[in-house]
Amino acid sequence: MHQNEFVFEPLPQPTLRVIGSDKLFPVHRIYCVGRNYADHAIEMGHDPDREPPFFFQKNPDCLLTDGRDFPYPSATKDVHFEMEMVVALGKGGSDIATENALDHVFGYAVGLDMTRRDLQGEAKKLGRPWEVGKAFEASAPCSAVVPATHIGHPAKGAVWLKVNGAERQRGDLDQMIWKVPETIGYLSTLFTLQAGDLIYTGTPAGVGAILPGDEMIGGVDGIGEIRVRVV
Image (cartoon, rainbow, N blue to C red; front, side):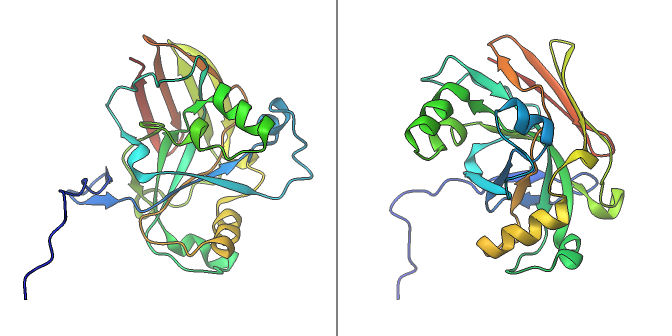
């Protein structure tokens, strides 16, 4: 018997650093919650009181690890930032009860859902999927993961972003329409969640455009910060 070989060398496993550890967090999937802050839903032209949660995905290799520059993507003239808390799952499952959901969380990080807004807008008008607007290379900048054993499970704390030193976004985790346990529980009715999944939990109001040369610094109080330069 000959050992099976790949027809070409597979790409490396996407990973994130873990604060306080020399081990890496292997990323399985990236789920993003849409319009999870009321003020952001309103600024995007939607009624936050009438919508159940909805989700879209980015590919694991969309990750841009902390400290790396964000390359301004092709085929767009309107790239937006969206600052978010990221939940990193340490175990998965289906139909997870809300009261048990936090038991599945390994830790937390801070991330940016970078969006080609013009391409997303065109897709919305045509009733097409959002991948061209959301799932492009380097569209998911993310910090190192802070284990929940270090910080607990943050339910309050500022979510903020500055561009070139000027504050552009500020909200609070307690403003999320769907809290972390509810999000995990609902998402697990749609997908079988796995250890290594990341959940971008939504962004407060104030999203806007960036250009090459800009520097974004953002954070979630109690978790950490991320710094990304646009090139």
